[in-house]
Length: 332
Image 1: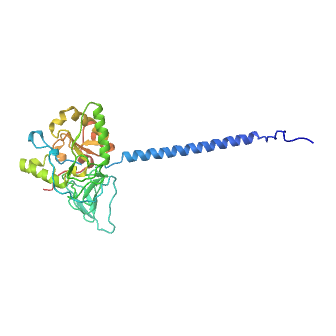
Image 2: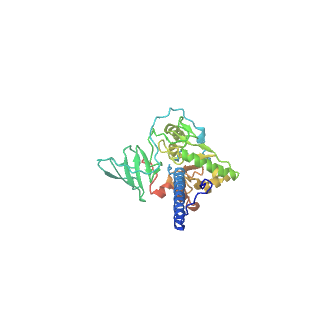
Image 3: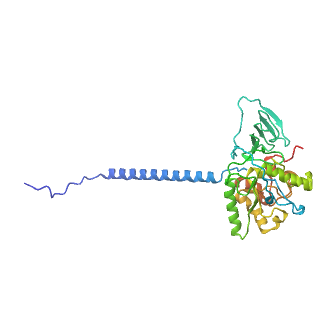
């Protein structure tokens, strides 16, 4: 009787054709897994980029510009104790065309020639009625709850105002006082730290001297300037209440808030590099008749890198008014 326990089992031979099929199948599976991983990584990268570089950034401004020759106290020295107004108005950074179903459209020509349509078309944002309009340069805009946006960017100047109870919501530090250098837009603050770090690496020191200001703070500030220099002069360097970009939380004044800043190493560097971080010189030199304000080398508005590079214009700054095709003029 034979003993089969020590006899090695017979190995089944796999044909060459089957081996090739198995190899191809493994390669296909491996390739599919790698493609899926690459797609997931790409989606993550795109989502991260969109989050970091989102617009509204579009979102500040000319409130208190001070001339060194006028001996006006810097904005940072003014602090109003008036109680802050409540507001739940949300800042919108991406353009969303607003329409009221069933409303009767009206067309109204604004001061700057923009055509506005809505349930109650109005020039600028003087009223609170929601409306849409097109600028002279063909940009689409809308007014929502008294706040004006053009191509998704919040616009505040002598033509387009903010409601007295407007308080920015998307801020790094919640607005709890009438004046703050920290209650500014989250995205702006992230970009500012990058700007500040880059300046520091070049041996320069930049810092925020004036940031958010409430409607009441701006009112007191402007009235003080009017009492000192008269209304006509005050209007060249200070915004009236409701017409100040500082109320948006999207701008700030740097270092010494006077004409001397433009001649400092910091001022020169900021003028040449701010756009790389999404900031613009909101009131450029030689554009006083367009912006309605004197040159402010210290006043930066955050708009995001895409628009900032366009407005930088290879060092020949252009204004938001020029770019969008709007004006900046008080009604009276």
